[in-house]
Image 1 (cartoon, rainbow, N blue to C red):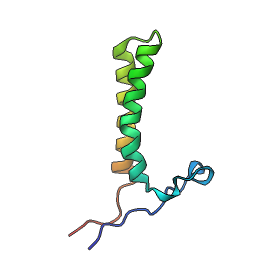
Image 2: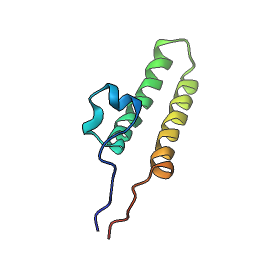
Image 3: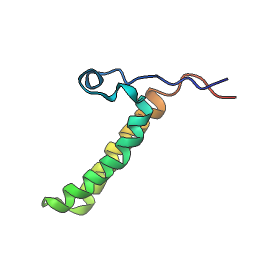
Length: 79
C-alpha cells in the first residue's frame, strides 16, 4: 500500500501564490529551518536576548511539527 498524502496545500495562502505544486509536508520541511533561522536573525538584529529568540523560534517550530504529525497526519500507513 502507498501512503496517501494530500496532493496540494489547500489554504488561503495556496490560492494566492504558486505553492499548489507542493504538498503540505513539503512546506513543513521548508518552514522548520526557516523559522529557526528567523529566530536567530531576529535575536541578533534586534535587542532581543538570544535565549528568547531561540526559545520563541523553537516553540513555533514545535507547533508546526505537532500540527503536521498529529492534526494533519498522512491518511494511510505504508506496508
